[in-house]
Length: 171
Image (tube, rainbow, N blue to C red):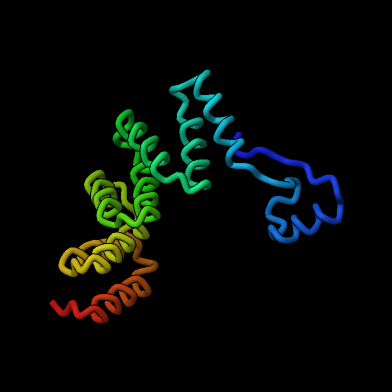
């Protein structure tokens, strides 16, 4: 599940289509997220508690830019499994696509409290705080990101310092 396929019978048109897609899907001629949505909905009717079907449906919603539907289903999953860090992170991404950075920041803070946030997400959290003019909140996630991945400390530290100084966060 996940994709529906449509055959392009004309060989030259099929080759042009595949070339345009960068040969990332060499055996697939066309994709339809609408059909994938239908397939996942049908699968959920037969096995409504199967997380894979819900995740597939979320992905099809996001692919179709049905972000409110994706968010509603993620909320349902989080109510069933509140410690699912992947869902908190996925929902944060959906919130960012919906241009709701404050809600995304809340999700990243939940991940921090659960002790399940990665360095990239910490940097993103700091960036969110900076774009929301909350400079005092940005420093801690930036520093945590540097501490979490010492191998990338120099580049992350320089990037964070550059952002903080560039925005006038001298304290």
